[in-house]
Length: 271
Image 1 (cartoon, rainbow, N blue to C red):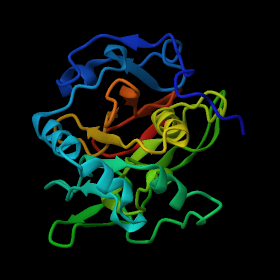
Image 2: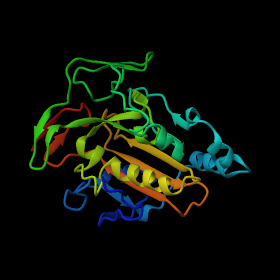
Image 3: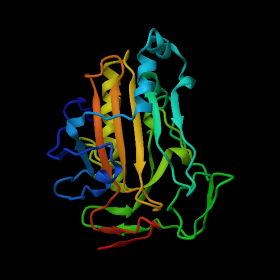
């Protein structure tokens, strides 16, 4: 596999919008010609964090906190996973990612495990029922079908990580959403990563060459109204010690060219 420089992944897919407004992100129309890898670079990759996120960043940058965190063990990655909302939908995940968090989940150290049977997500089942007390989905009739498209043959959906396994993320429900194959990896071109893999690859490559840095990483699934399947995932990231060294502001479309998705239920049909 060719390793790309974190600054070399450049596309003609830049957009200027108010990215703190979820409705503007939802309203951004997917165009397979303009966004062939299923993501848009927002505001020249300048992240716009919420006040709560800015406070977390400020704390990490204070005093000796950054160096102390770099010295903490592998099992002390600072990650915030939220509970599912009242509709059973996965919410934002935020993490401070170190080089050691990349290494601990690398193939040389640990084989990626399968998703446990309890990892079930909103929109996954046509007959899905959500138990709010258990934070658990139940269902038997899967919405995930094989599709034959012009450039892809396979299952339409992946269980798509918010914080990638390769960045220290878990395999649990509160870290995954129902994402199309293209939302997850674009066209699956290792030389030109797409979907969520674009941001993930930039972070991994940066940390490999900046092992004393930490990346503040946030992945926010964005839903329209009461829909069970997110319209996309908003990824924001910034290096902590030197804020200018790595910056990411990316909208990853939860679409698949040639497929029409019912975001209320997860059902889909080919065009």
